Length: 439
Image (cartoon, rainbow, N blue to C red; front, side):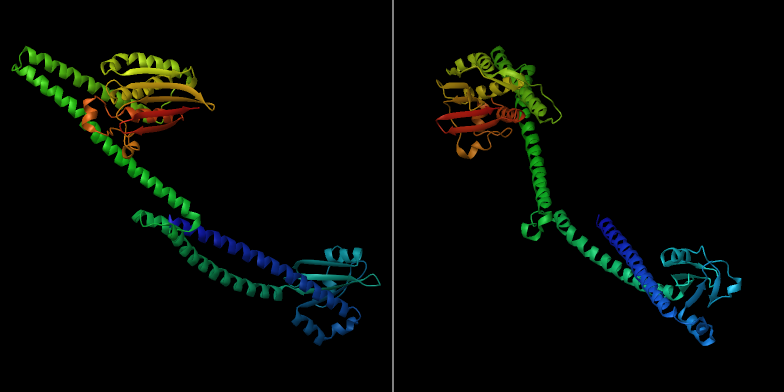
């Protein structure tokens, strides 16, 4: 990339130098041309009163030749009456020459063209005299082009020097421009705001954040893989162990019945884990599109509590639904999953004889869903991590109560899918409340 930027810098600077040089040469040429026309116009004014015999003298002709000047007198009908550089008898009629025609029409005329007589480009100035004749003064371009070529050489040398300077500067600028980015490849931590210029600071910050996110994502995937392996291994080990005892024939009828019950419980736990993992995978899929419709949260909450009534009764937990019918734009299946996980957790981590209160009500243009329990509560240091996958406040107690450790992670993903807001309120020994605001 550095080489490419260098080449582009040099190419742009070279193009700018060449264009500037060409424009300077063109400007200089126009200035020089106008200056020469002004000079030969002044010569014409000086020559006009002089007798032509003066210019026929050999000494004066040589002086004209040395100065690159050519004097021509053209009669009103276009015949050449005098020319200091050629035999007038061999010259054709000059009436249609541009500078002559312009002088006869407007009093004076100018032109630049190739002269067959002198074999050079010549600048001509013509002025009409009082008797209708035209005095023309020409200056050969040899001297002009000699000056022009000298200037062209100087401009070329200067252009090369400027391009070389630009190449050196572009190399330094490219190194300075890319230094923070190259530094990133070696160490993101060493980069700080003081060492980065303002224009690239947001870019560096974005790269740093993306790097941190990638590392965190990799760490989370590693932890998730390890946790999944561990969580799946536990029920599978139990199933394999009990099945081996039964198949060996050393268990009596009473033990066989108990082992079968343990196998069934482990199978249920295994299925719950697999279902939760699949649900999380589905929610993580960015290409997954869920169908949204108007759903009544109060009605869904009522159905969820009816389904969990037996589980609550086994722990002597009282279930209560408060509020009123409120409709939100949501996916019905995900709302069922969300309420089931929240209510199931509220029952599972409650105290015997406790209560779970589910409330659905409008609040300032939004719909609020609240699931509150009178259970064990969550301490402050655990509240920020409680929605992480497989995170448990008390691992041994959680496993005894049958949780997979994925329920609240699923809740968090569902809330994000619906652009809702979730807050947790909890104190150890006083219970937990989770409130969700839907638009």
